[in-house]
Image 1 (cartoon, rainbow, N blue to C red):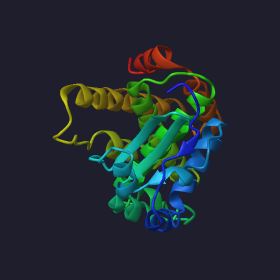
Image 2: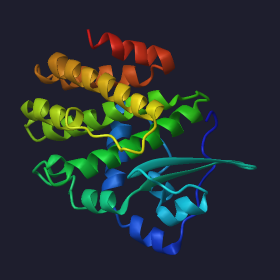
Image 3: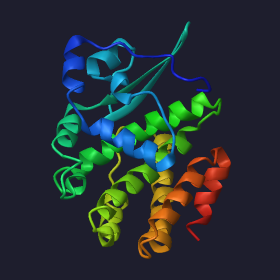
Image 4: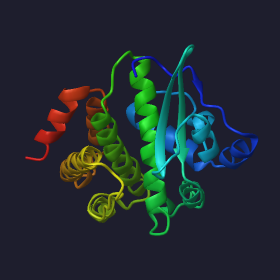
Length: 239
């Protein structure tokens, strides 16, 4: 997609009532926009449930899917999040003094939601700038984003030394859906490999030294790298 989304996919009244009560997703978007100094349309307006996704011609299989529909008058966009993800993330208060987003009972759902919001923000901002995005680039950025967002959540609470444990939970305890094709599974595995390596490098370079300003500068520069340049850069961080 190389043009910005014109409008969200339609959704039913029941879906609007269910999704618009969820504040955590708005927090995730605000955090990512603050980290990267970007701005995208409000993701809450683009949330759809399974009914809206099916109406757009797509029956979701994964707990998080970004839906892009080419129409005569432009591009319609929707973000599907499974009910279990919505419920799990809704129970994690991002403003609590305790690190609720990384709690054992919430982390899987919060990380999944963060990936979805990352996909939406990255695609929307890249499209607005007239830049194409590959599927691998989209997945790699989501891997980086969920780590950056959550490690900063810990850092602000004086818990940055929990970063290694968080990283292992995000990147090492991974299972892939059995219905994924060979190419899809390889793409997700490569995104995990690059995201994990970059997270470890950020940890060693900035988190251990408590250099939050340096980390934000690095994240913002990397975010603006495009396509093959970004993937090559992240690959070099593995060495």
